[in-house]
Image 1 (cartoon, rainbow, N blue to C red):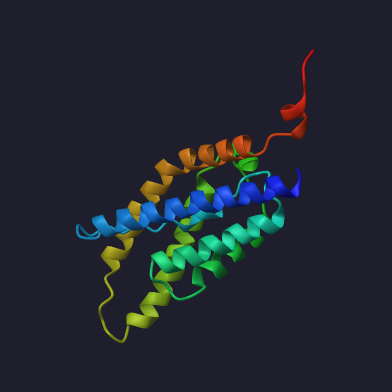
Image 2: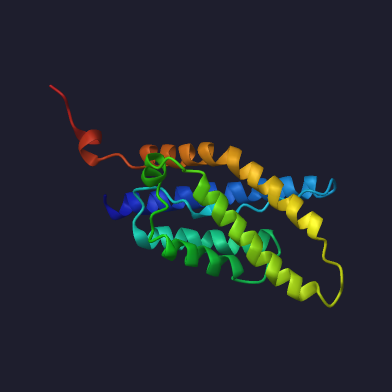
Length: 179
């Protein structure tokens, strides 16, 4: 794969993830009046399979900053957590690896749960002085986010696969004249 198609795939993927961030933030702003808040960081760990390692890491860092911005979290908290999970899984969160595994949804749900636990610990220590922490609200947000992640993970992975197949075409297929 040449550099130009790698750049194009990165830009298309970044735009797609930005649209997901906007959609989830709009969903959160409308459902926050009812008391629901969706936080699904594990959705933003998946990168297109043909994107090289450097661009995958850049996309994960961008997603972390966007999560921090849209969720009003401490600066670079999600960046640190996303990079840590990315490095721990040894860059194996690719589409082809998840399609082959039987428990493809278990890992993202576990990652999402661990992010919630980190946020719980961080916010619990911050709000212990104010006594405004609501444990039931925290677990209801975790449950609704997990349900949303469970249902939207497969379409998300299919869209990433679609972006990969439509963005990257081998040059031989574009210029080949069949005779």
